[in-house]
Image (cartoon, rainbow, N blue to C red):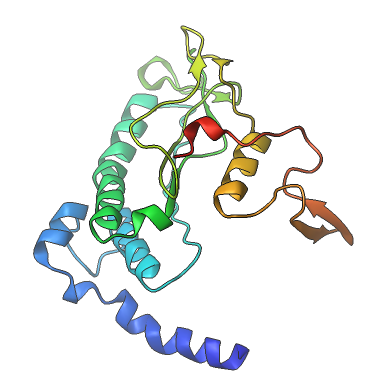
Length: 209
């Protein structure tokens, strides 16, 4: 079975990666100007094609969001590269009937502090890491749409209402996948371990449809 799967992966890859069959309006929706040029937009379209073919987990990566300097310029460039394509992926999955069974997550491991980091000079001020209050967005996969959950203080420094810890988040994702975060284990350093590693957790039912 492993050999057969490896064979099918290799033989199906060329067709999967060839975007020439995609309609012009789809390419324009994602913001793809050249189907042969590597870009975040192209990767978003590939993600949809992978989901269509039953691939269970797809991860996209976009660099660099670590703006210790030049926050304004960095975020402007990143938003220009990701906003249209990310929205197009969600829209495309929905119009093809795939969004209800696909969970789309956008986020990172931290946010940015609301105070200036001036290491790069006044002209290119940045922000340091903030693990106390930051946001991410989710779509599809059994979630309510069009809502926000949780609040920070007035400065955006730390969460003050409806806090969600990383273990809460993991437990919620596992629940949406039909798994029990307390029971699913993996081996680490020769010993069984759960994703939440014994930490307090809860499924955030308020965001589940």
